[in-house]
Image 1 (cartoon, rainbow, N blue to C red):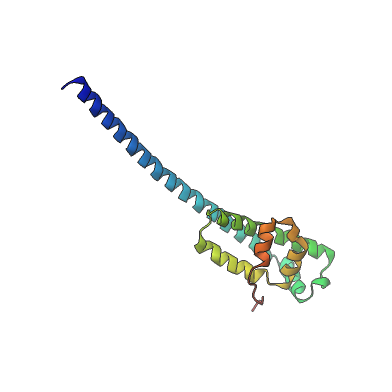
Image 2: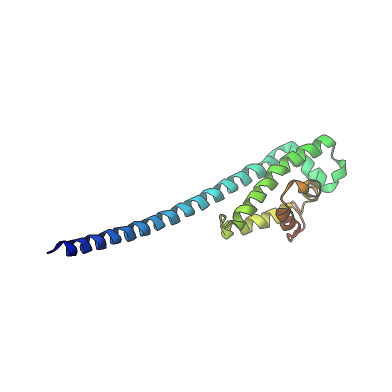
Length: 156
């Protein structure tokens, strides 16, 4: 065998190694992207549960319910507490909205979240809170929320 043939075989083997390495790298990037997407969805779901869980507090639940009956009956302190409770929940929704728009949030999780937020945002107390604080959110997100098909909120 001459040196030219050996060099040609070496080049073929080297090129094959590069192709195999690129294939492996592509697989690793896909796996990493999927893991990153799953982590983002988990973080948003956890933040949503934590934010929504604030309504387990008896005082917050009380003035939320009273505010649904008559928002003006709430004291200024109760309104501040309500806004402080609702803001993190809306920020989580805004983050989920952006993650979904960037294809980092799966539709199977996004659609039920939108449904739940649409229902929640139809509560008279939240309607008031949103109208008074929506300027604190991105305009695209404001348009999205304002365009949601909100149902009639009821506790029963």
